[in-house]
Image (tube, rainbow, N blue to C red; front, side, top):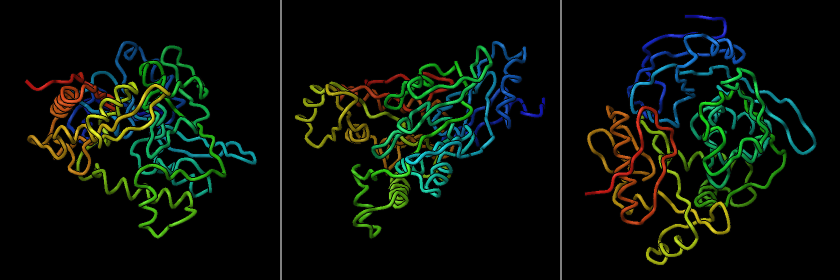
Length: 354
């Protein structure tokens, strides 16, 4: 089926459309070149009760089975400046824009803020859902508004920043994934901003680059790109979705007790004065999982947070491994782990060792 704004095909392999590179098939796949065609597509009678999965680069999903209903991909990728004042610039980016393409576009125009989020895989449309963050910065700080099509009314709706209800790797869109389809994100980016280099490793990497004082935003972006390239496997070479588990947030008293028992445990400020954030990577590594491999499902040797597909692992095998990892961490430390990626076609269930 074709339309001026979209193209639909059936029984399509999604192996090339997810960064884990696991095999799964979409019952129907729609590539949408014109977001204005979305209401027309979604009003088709045969879609009224069908499940819909919106897929960007597939960098934050684990396909644990075939995908029923409609898999929808927004392909338009435009970036534009739509407003400006003395202190900041308002930038609009289509949902289909590659995230790092946007970061480089903003840096090339002297805009600040997104440099710490360099080289994160995925698309602009996915960034508000996960409230992506890295190296001490979260994207929600810079999002002014999100444009989305309401699945019920089929009308375009604008979500102001407060409507998005951003939290740690969380948002209103993540809590209600079936209510709207993001088509555009607008960013309020400062023209001047102090660089953020306090996160572990950033200043050392800048020093290794020969940058000892007053780094530029572009130099910070380069340092972080180098760190990510060294620490995280390239999905084009080894299938993965980046960090699979969130850093757990626990009560301050729990963190203090764990720190007393395990002095090397990294502990960071939480989402409030009474909470602390723990390093999931440290917990997983101490539980013995770093570099683990069983058949083609495994954990990256570079980083304990990254589950990897060595070639022919299925999504179900990776999901089962994630459950075993979480169960062993909870059994040893009493701390529950939650996955970052959205699980499609399966259910995450921590499994304690027998």
